[in-house]
Amino acid sequence: MNSDAWITRILYKKLISFYPKEFREQFAESMEQTFSDLCNEKRQAKKRLFSFVIWTFIETAMGIIRERLLLITEGDSMQTAFRTLGSSGVISFLFILPFMIMEIVNRRNFNEDFPFMLFFVLWLNLFAVSLILLPILRAGRTGNHGLANPTDTQGNTLLINPKPALMVSLTLVLLIVILFLLTTIGWEPLERLMNGPNPEVAYLPGQVISLLLISIPIAAGIIAGGPIVKTLRERGSLLAHPFHLVIVVLISFFLLSSVIGLLADQWPCFMGVQYCD
Amino acid sequence: MATTDSKSPLTPAVFHILLALSRGERHGYGIMKQVETDSDGKVSMGPGTLYGSLKRMLNAGLVRESDRRVDPEMDDERRIYYQLTAAGVQALVAELERYQHIVTLAQERKLYPKTFAHEF
Image (cartoon, rainbow over all chains, first blue to last red; front, side, top):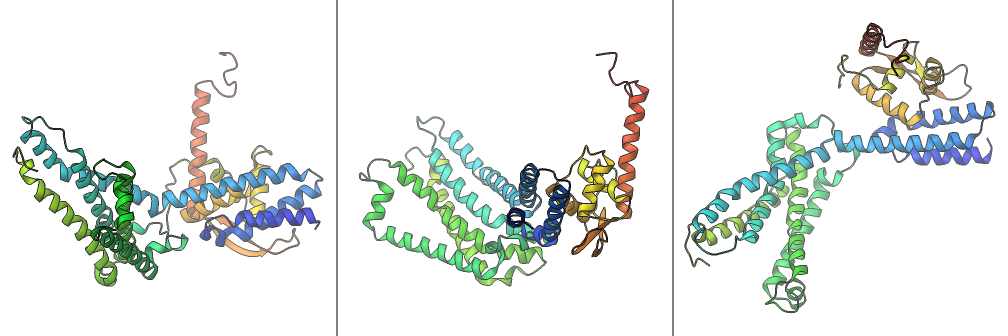
């Protein structure tokens, strides 16, 4: 075998390593052998190798993309994620809809702007709770039916292995606690970051950062819920991962209590009291 | 194991692989060569398409691994051979019947073999 052929085969082997693990384990050896057979055939027929090699590399790269996409779309991960996102968005909106109607109906005679920010915050908190709890509820209801094409061996181990999931979610919870404490004591750099140089004026970067910060408890809850979802799908117990469950319950409680607090605070406004704030 | 509905149309790659394996069990390179022969060199299948299709066909129960042995015509390592299953034969027959129906329809409408020769 000459050095060009040797390099080509090494490169093809490297290319095949980009296939998903399961595919690689099943077919990598056969693919290398087939590629080698094709190279030998071209060489024996004294055909030009270069165009054949380029075509095969492109064709195989397309195959890798196809397998990766199929892994995403056929597997649980992306479909379920989109379904959960959609369902959570709709459920949260349906929950705040009665309050929006009350706001519109009971305050129609007052010359006031509609409080979009209030309803957005309500919706966002409920959306976060749904994102965390919905996969757990679904897994509890459907059991093993959701594992038609499990992705356990393909990656996403962070979301299903109890120990790393617990460590990551605890780190995120710790981050939330630290930020909460810093806000409570009025730590100046954080205050400036959130409120800008003039606290009296609305500060857009601070609002964007606040929105981004809400993703921390959501991520902590979803990651902590991962092993619970997996266990429930395998017909296991909800209490199989008690620490994860505590994190999920605490984060959901924290988010729900802020919704209830806001609703209680704004209740007179929804009921049509004019100077309610 | 997932199964496939033998009444649903097959992709060209799956059809050609089933057709190639109807001649007997083959390893990957053997399937490629058979596909080329069956199509008079018009269909050329790369390893990406071949093994991607084989994976789905194995999952659907259309083919199975028959053996791992040395090809007497090729002086190297042991190879995995694939063969049709009963479901694979059924799917191939259903596809051929579909083609047959289309050809008959085209003949009835005088589209085939003089496809659009006079009209356009």
